[in-house]
Length: 162
Image (cartoon, rainbow, N blue to C red; front, side, top):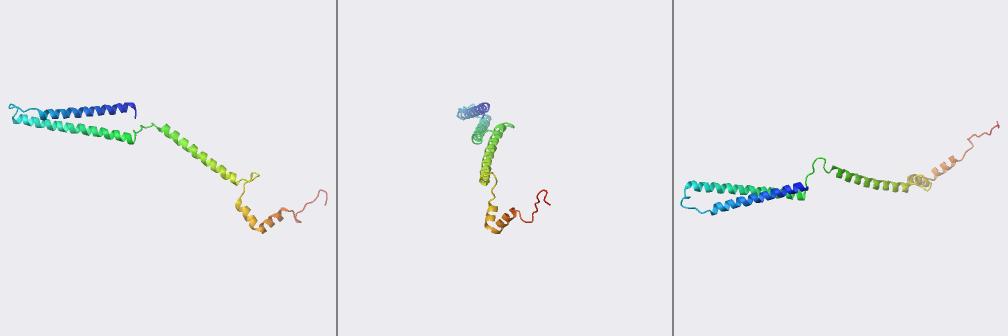
């Protein structure tokens, strides 16, 4: 809450208290004023009754204004003031950027750990499923070792030896 809004709320509070005090005082003065023999006619009685109704309604309105102000202060206290368009966006963007950087760092560290677990001593990837399959299947291992050696079907001729 900015200082201008704070002083505005305090001014409204002071005005509401002043109105309540003024209307209550007028109500008490009207009720406690002595009735003389000259003032005992119906016109004066009707005027006093209207004055009391008016002051009572004004007192109730002033109290309602104070209650409205109290509710607004409570909302500001619990929820906080509403931001104007464009206000607070930079802070929100900075907070989001910081969170994205932190999550990206965590994901990169996790990816690096997984890669380090898959890389063998010579920098090549180890595929565990194929290694297990080759050890379990002896025929596949023999076939791969015999195809690696040159057989009689390969023709190699030396230069000049026809």
